Length: 266
Image (cartoon, rainbow, N blue to C red; front, side, top):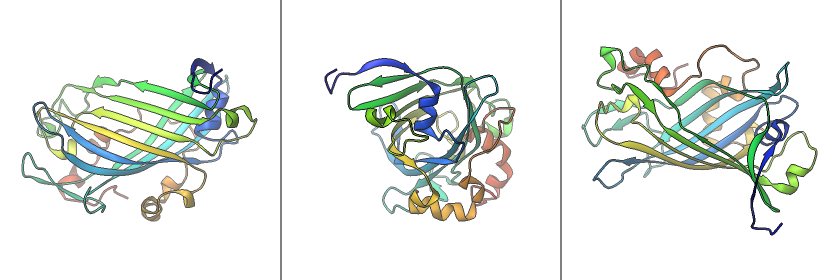
């Protein structure tokens, strides 16, 4: 196979676990950094935030075959000029100043039962997941959220690529340390931005890599984990119910948001 020629293959869930986590059930991390832009029809883009985030994950065997994926994740919004954490944001469209709510999703879960798709070349293997969530907006039915997120449907696109050296994948190791992430997201305004039914979207563009220990994470995340120690480890069991999202988190902590609390709440 030429070095630059890619072939679509289906690889085992076990290989995916080695890339994303660890066969022994240890916690591993993916950390990312990037930017968030506005995309408003007939308007130039605005560079709203930079982001720094992480996912603490573990994979555990399912009794009937396959693997549970268990994780919790954080993403912090930074001022793109000062590179400092944003706890308040001046909305340039409405002139409101609102509290910023970082992503604090716990849990984020899944089950990998069979093979997973990958693009394989002589040099690299890339696992690609293109997700298009489309479901009822949990905030739409309540009057108190009409100024924040009135749309009846939540709709987004999340595009993930995890790349490793094909030679590393061919070694029978418990985990693969050298993993590169590329993540893009197109989604609605976040509820805490208080954009109501204003037209437009957010575009996230980020890259990252795997980390085997907390000490390998960006310093900003290490500092935040002092206040949020539960994110130093992945969950240890599958929890019934929906994954946490920024929309459900906003619903759960709306009163704290109105009070101007520091997020994530502890």
